[in-house]
Length: 246
Image 1 (cartoon, helix red, strand yellow):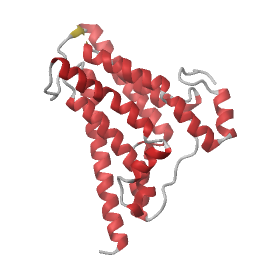
Image 2 (cartoon, rainbow, N blue to C red):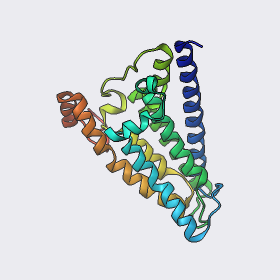
Image 3 (cartoon, rainbow, N blue to C red):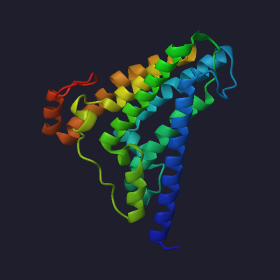
C-alpha cells in the first residue's frame, strides 16, 4: 500500500468513526433530555452514582475547552498519525466531543427523582419548544460552517492530501444577531427538555453555565486569530442574547 493509499484509508476510518459517533451521541442526548434522563445503563446508586455522574458532568466542559489550548492541541495531535495530525485535527476534536457527550448520556446513573412531568397540551408545548431548540442549534452549526463543526473538513482534507480549509469568521445568519449562537442553541436544548428530573436539572445547570462562560475563552482565541476584524464584530454584535434586528 502506497503512502497516499494509506492516508486515504486512515482518513476514511477517522471520518466514519467521527460521523457515526456524532450521530449516535446526538441521538443519545436528544432521547435522554426528552425523557428527563430517566433511563440509562449507568449501574451505580447512592454516593457512587453521585461521584460517577459528577465526573461525567464536568468532563465535557473541562476537556472540550482544554483541547483548544496549546498543550491540549498537542494531546489532540497524539490521537492521529504524525503525518496526518494537522489535517485530522478538526476531525479528532469533533470525535472527542461526540465521545464525551455519548459517555455522559449513555453511562449516566439515573437518580429516579422526578421533579415535574408535563401532560396534555403542556407536554405538547414543551416538546415543540424542544424541537425548535434543536432546529436553532442545527442552524447555528450550519452558519458556523457545518464541515468544521462535524469534523468533515479534517478527514476530507487528509483524503485529498491537503491541509484543512477553515471557514472565515462567521458573521452571517444567526451570527448577525449574537456572537455565540451555538452555545445559545446548546443551552436552549438543555433547558427545553420536557421531563424534569434531578438528573436533568443537574446537567442543565452545569452545562448551561458552561454555555455562558465557556465562549469567553473561545473569543480570546478569535481575537488572536482575526485581530481587528473580530474586535469590530464584538463591538457591534451582542455576546449571547440575540439582537433581533441589526
